[in-house]
Amino acid sequence: MPYTTTFGGAFERAEKQGHAEPFALPQRWREGRNKLDLSAPFDFVSTADTIGGNSGSPVLNRAGEFVGINFDRNRHGLVRNFVYTEEQARHISVHSRGILEALRRLYDVEPLLRELTDTR
Image 1 (cartoon, rainbow, N blue to C red):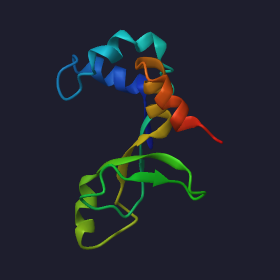
Image 2: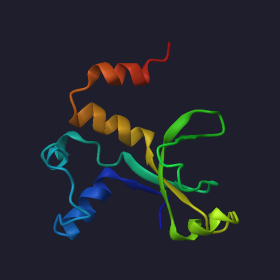
Image 3: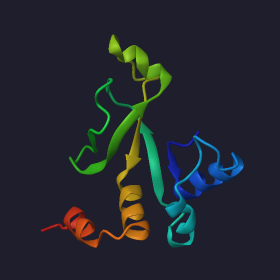
């Protein structure tokens, strides 16, 4: 399986599941589909030592740059409450590019986008 999903993949999955929960996308997203870069990354998995309570934590790369927000882990990660293993433990994050893509294309939040992307 690929380590990342895309907006296009999210729409494809929602359509395949008949837009039924838990695969239903918000109406705003369905109406704004043509505005989105469907190849933009949406979620990604990585190896990290996370535990319950880490949801919402920033994910940084080796350079200390923000690359996403942690929100879940795979079922193999449940054992990390006691032991961490790099072979199976994965955590799932929303990708920073996906966040910016959605904010930029689907929501009217230009001041927030400027604040998030200001490199001064």
